[in-house]
Length: 395
Image (cartoon, rainbow, N blue to C red; front, side, top):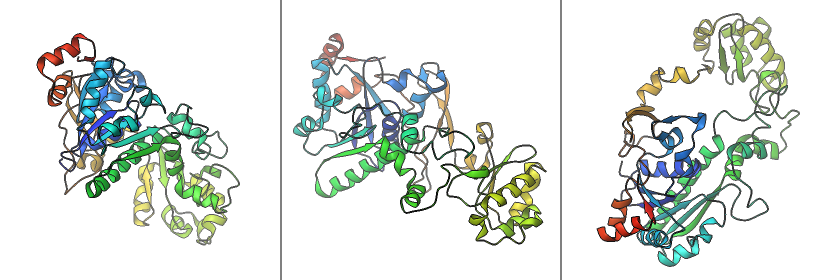
């Protein structure tokens, strides 16, 4: 994929949102250079489920594709000087440290703009670069709690429930990449760089734009979470996930009479479309009780015939065999940097019918340190001197 060919990005990112955003841009053809400490970035050394594949953490496998890696000690004057030399020819600098960290290192926006006036300096933080929450740790679960997302997820008769994936970080990554692309587009027209800022708190709010806008504009919300098994506080009946005799089935929006025909529920035949909201708990209870009588597969023909929006609940073990995911090549297994096969979740968009390819598997720490420094104009002797001074590293 060459959509961003010629764009050079220095990524000082760690955890998930920043590295994932950088990977998205790398998938599109940008030359993303991951600038890591000599001991490796956090996501390389820590893994969800404590799962490593040989030398690769699964977090690094999730976010390290198509990037070159250099290892630099930013507290070493020679290492810092090397990074500043790279900035001179970069289009974008990305960082997601706590506010003030890059400034303390001498790598803040004003310092780098003095080196490269056209630089796009993109920052991702937990709560923004200023304000009363500026210095709080920004982490997905904390943001789900603070933003109302957890309070609005789950059953009304249960506790606030976090989403089963790090959804705030992932949405922030998309916003981060989007904002950088917008800045690159503007730069192509004007030549001007700029400061771009995103944060996890606003990403968590943005995830709730539909229900939150409804609530802000007077929508009644007697409970924070959906009553009677309804999936959300703002939804009609029987919108939600319901048990069958052998599993679970999701039902989306459907008129009561259509449900009556598809599920054989005579009690729903006299309900009107308006009752989907006005009598939503009654509708949901009737549907939920009925679905328990048969296996999931037994309900599918009637739901299909009635054009009811529905889906069986799949778990991860079902996804590999899902024919649509297989058709779209959502997962790809390749040989990893340490020689063992690794499976990655691929880029989620296509361009002219094609998906971005894997140019580089997630790399070993500092794998391209020598290469990148050479491109920046360092001689072999100068590179060796940087290694001798422990200003840079390679694995």
